[in-house]
Image 1 (tube, rainbow, N blue to C red):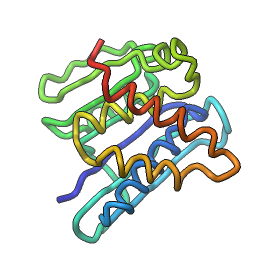
Image 2: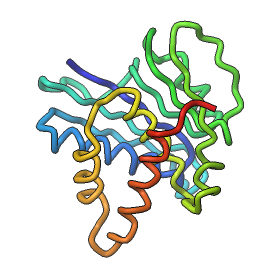
Image 3: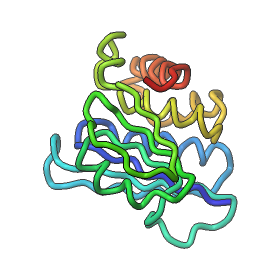
Length: 179
């Protein structure tokens, strides 16, 4: 079984980091993975997206054309990728930023005000982890134990103080229902 995910937004929103956490989860779960980042030349404010493939078998290509799951953190990314999501797929979006209407009846869309939620609990910059947490709760791709271990691998020792806040944001997303 192969799971394909696209995470997309502006540079600086932690898109590539969220994809890296997913990739490390798969690695720790002894699965095959590919992680393919794509970003514009701008450091912050430009476009960024990340394709993650997780499989029980060898992965032939890291390119994701029709993902089962999409995390969209801005309007342009939502518009770019929404039509590519497979029927019966899952789309998670930050409706603090994305106000595009969904015109597809054959997918499940979960809207969370992730940026606003992060600000309310003093976790500014953690909207990516809130949406990732909601996706993980919906899909049951990985246990929280695996996520915690992956987070420890993704965050370097000199920034270890950020592990707890990222895990807090993931848990907040996992426990929050659509708003």
